[in-house]
Length: 460
Image (tube, rainbow, N blue to C red; front, side, top):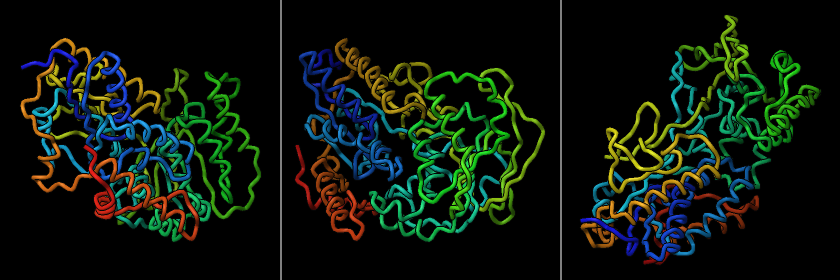
């Protein structure tokens, strides 16, 4: 049985981060503009919406978190029904979604660290940056404690995540008290003994993946000295920056070269042309071994020089990228960490899977900014709408409301009204906190669920 029009279309979206929310909003507008009707359910494994905007952006970046305002407006209209604390593949199967919806869009993102395959990477004291980010952002599924007992710490990577990790490690907790940082995280940072944070990149200053705003903010962290090394800038002589953005960032780095040490109690060192070879240590991390690299003269490519260096550190954080989050029973490309697709239409063994789509990082890999997520969603939704209008989708065979199934299974799902209750609760905690904040995050999952379900009416 096929669905040949846009009348009474039913779509499930898995993942309530920006990718899923943008997809839902674009879908609702596209179907409405075409004179049709669509019911959209947005499933999220966490009790609260917003994905990496809530749990992947450092708490001292309120401007980036302003994206939440627009995401909130999209969900608050009521055309998209939020169903939180539900994991597809555990609480409900993908096949059960296909039975109830004309189409399913997977927007699960990428929340795991990409691997760094070097000896010693699994030693105690070696961590993935994603785990640390989840901790300092108050993610409910990571331990509440994080031991920061190392004076010298290394961060491997030259992207914004590496910069966030380095900045939070180097920053003094007093400068985070006004943010929405959770109390357990603030306590962990206050117990930190970190004095030196080393950030290592395999390429040179002209190939950093930071943004100018993030880089500039790094140099404004109070009581932290930025240390760069003249040897890393020798290859820039006579080079013309390819973009204005790179020109700005190189100017910032050059200004740091001219700075005198202020004698700050913490230092943040930026090292370029360092390719990691091995994490050193026996029972725990004791250092890092690198090979010095140099440009080949062909784009951003570098080659090893044969010069080996060792740097003493007692903790290592790898920030070399994210890896996609698979969905049980959905195709998955283990090598690339994405759901195989062609322009958002999911593929299985080179054949399209009818009614199954992907968008966001799980579609194209963990690269790009929020703007790319919007264009991603537009492409995917255009294909979904075309497939629906062309009668290429299978109509639902089960007519009950999915909430009835979740109720029967005693799944403690949360709703949009539940999020509004949790949001109000966190803001109240912030207003009454000894250090006034916009909010104080509730961290434990069961506490989030209890507040959401006790303070909300289910919106049908």
